[in-house]
Image (tube, rainbow, N blue to C red; front, side):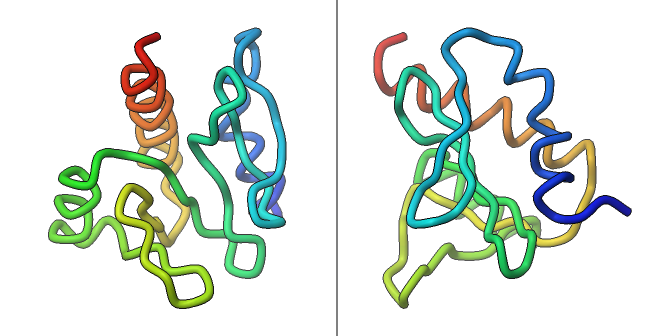
Length: 108
């Protein structure tokens, strides 16, 4: 199995073909940006996926057992969800969903 960082970039591979999507860092975590706005990251210690979605969608994923609250330094981020485990399909779907959420919320 790929190392966590390689796995994250592999799942993001097709998205990085788009001109508006770039690699970066967020709070020291590797991340993806669309037009400069964060939409996905990876918790480097655990290799878990972190994506930005509507607060309602975050709660839905938590209720389904797919996600967990994202609480860096103890503070809960309502529009971010932490996804444990490595499921290619889940990661790729959530990356696209997150990208679409951020672009829609910015009127793109």
